[in-house]
Amino acid sequence: MKGKETQTLRCPVCHKGRIIDAASGTDPSCLNLYGPRQSAKAQWFAKCPKCGAQIGITFPKS
Ligand SMILES: [Zn+2]
Image (tube, rainbow, N blue to C red):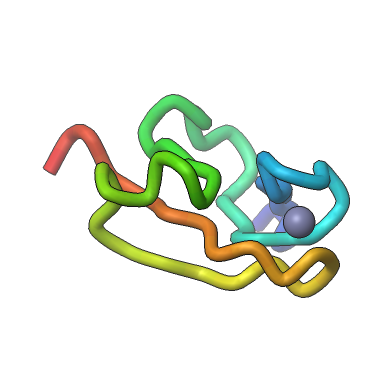
């Protein structure tokens, strides 16, 4: 068994805040992160813990 290695997707606004973790090896292009100006495109939302920006998320394959 491998450990629970993850890759972190960071805030597209400040590039510091941790928005979501993906399993290691997950193709990052399987989801998109949007800054507040593009949030109309998004289906899901998270808030950056660093800068407080509302980050939109979409899963293009779904
Ligand atoms: Zn941020």
